[in-house]
Image: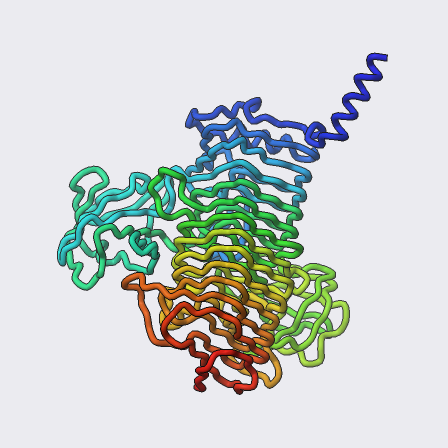
Length: 606
């Protein structure tokens, strides 16, 4: 009788507490001890390998700090969108957490700080489903970004203080930044000006052509010609090698992936790249330097990058500060038709040098045939089979014959792998480029976010088949109840806070690349006039927003139209509140005044 009661009690626990059914794998049992500063990679790898083939597993970290080196870590060849460069170099990456072919698996970080040594990917997923990563922080022992603060400036002498995390040496009067197995060979440099909270493009060349003299540990004087350089005391120079040979995290061919309460204190190369994956949720993910570190930069390039994903992408209650590129980019990829191989078969090619080597089409996918100069879809079809024939080209076989108007030079887009996107309750700051890029034909909601001091557009909606080859059109976008604060200081005169800028180089009567974009009930705190620029867009509204003008010092300003509309149809600009002295101006190109409904008085024609 007692055994029956015990069994019933256990069953009740399992039914009411799903976690009780999970198997806990404690890294401490595998020899991973916190705060020892020894290499935990071999033990971590062994524990993860043991988990393969099992379900409902929680991998529990010990808390405190653990250190991981490439020695003993996972090594895999990975081709990663927007971060694969130079065919001659190896694409084998060192990975801390390699989650391949796992299901119903959780990494419980237990507030552990994972410190990476050398160039490593924090976590990478492949062919996995129902994965949750939570309560964990990642940082680099030696970030691949070097930072130095200017203490004094004269025409021929600059005194600097180098951040303690930025290892350097003086070699024959020249400063050399180095790390664990690498040194900086080129110097892509962004300057942070604290009093303006602004990040601007800069140049490290004056320092490289000067004589460097170490006056004390982490204090270096540069003697040379600094006239006309515009450096100021307090400026922080952040410099890195621009070559993208890594990423912060990688989610590939995986489904139902959740990151919760994750801190990415530094990411080398791209940030977290999600590629051909479905249903991804980032909640309370923070990309920012570790508190107390004194560093400015947390991301070498983009923070959250989504290439060819589907399902629902949710980015909620996240924070990004200090990235050398966009906090969020969501896009597909146009591949160019290079050969017609038969009545139902084509050869297509990756066109941008940073994206190639991965499968971009799969059996059953729907594709659009697109005219590259106009970005107009010409026909649609379904994929019967697709295969990589080399790193840059794929052979695609269709279920039926090719559309009659198919030609080489056209591009195709995978329209099955296009996501719905929700970006809500986030804060984006300290970035020299844009805040958010999105090109997907499914529903997009951008709501309750704060875009603070983005050097370029707060939001960019592009689509192109000639430069980055990042596809496609948007059909349903709501931008609502956001705050845009001092955006666009890096891109004058084209410093519009919201930019709808498809790269169609030829217009087609009656065709518009984008449609159904609503910008409503936002607050724009601006230092300059430009608010919205839009091209080739149908059903565009800018309603009930509040615009507040501020004078914040020496950021560039000019007398330009607030709205710049080019070849748009059915536009409404009404109900907005203007807390400024000047009269708002609308500029029209390649469209008539009857295409716009507005309560503003001044409209100019180009």
